[in-house]
Image 1: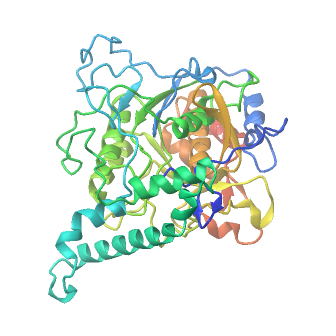
Image 2: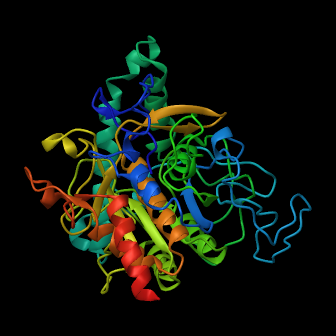
Length: 460
């Protein structure tokens, strides 16, 4: 995921975050009625019902596990003794007490920045294809991917050239300055070695035991905000209420400032499944993917083990039926759909055409449903709070909803819960909203609770 894409378009590109002074009464709009998810009303319907704890894996940039609004909400590995430097549970990951960090090494060093996937492709294939006549090639597919990656990278670099003078003269605010510098120094720099700290071969999927147990990492803003949306303590007057009350967050650090590696994503999914997660939140994505099959196999592993994966649709305002955002809900080689995968677009508080967030990807066949993703106030590191926006915020709304339903209706499997969330979504028929997703709706937890109660009775 390019973590600079949270979404206000400035100078032709996106800045990293949106901050705003909190307005009383609006902090938890996504939990309310109207175009929220009716979460508060759903809890009123469940006040006499007991719940069981559910583990939600957050595959992201890291989580501030000491945040005041996440206390009691962090997963603890029951089979690992903290700090003894021994792999007590013999899963290959030493002292993985709260999850695992695939972006670090055994010495405790962590990767923070990375190239975009298209930059890595351009760098890897540059010497092979520069100046080559495509008519002489045997592998036309690889050359096509290379050509597109090269064009994209060089186009973005050319666009950034016009801002170099502004950088030198101090014309930009801190966020914009950082975005431009990160793009030039890391994200679009074909010579930047973004795997030197970790030391593994990102193309070797047999090498799986790397990383460390620092589940926060150097920049956990994104992952902490996502975790707060899912699990922040409800009703304490701090920040925004989480959607799910009885959950534990497992932090699996996989997403740097730049694009995540397919290998890390695949291993993170498998780690989450093997360690008991029932829901996996995946608020990341990219335009290119070099190891699609391996990622798909990991997703299939989660699918066959009954674990629900919730993926953000992406923030490029594009139709992902035509231009995929990886990992996609349907790879080119895939014959059958994954039963336990949901792809989520971002909705707003506004009616009509403004209901779809201007940045949100959409797709009648590949985006399942929408959820609130605009101006979401929740936790960020150092026990602070911030408004952020993106499909990255919409996905954990649904992860939280799924975990909440599972906690109160443990007899229902995740496929049933997924189906209920889709069937109970509030459908809007105005303008072209129905064509934006499979359901044409926005998540409605109150209605989902009603259907869960019926399903629970039928199950008994």
